[in-house]
Image 1 (spheres, one colour):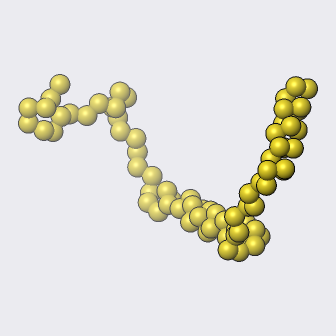
Image 2: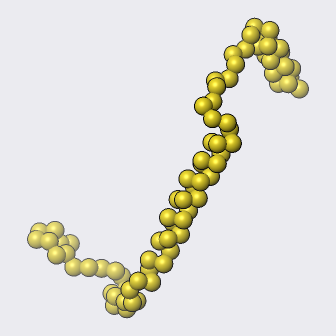
Image 3: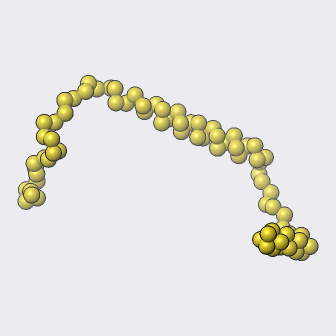
Amino acid sequence: MQFQQIAISILAQGGESGAEAPAPLWAPPVVFGVTIFSILLILMFVAVSYTNLGNRHDAVDEHSDPHRQHPAKHQGLGH
């Protein structure tokens, strides 16, 4: 309740002192929404176009090493 009273008193003081007007937009707000929606739609189609990428090649049998270890192929960097 106290917060509501504080907010109302701040708004009442701001209205009397001449609050600033919002900055003008260079286009109607609908244009911003449609532009953002179309950009996200294009990005969605780009992402969906990559969904079939894994089916280009035949499946390869899994490596026989159960612990996923590989030999060090660099000189002096072995374990």
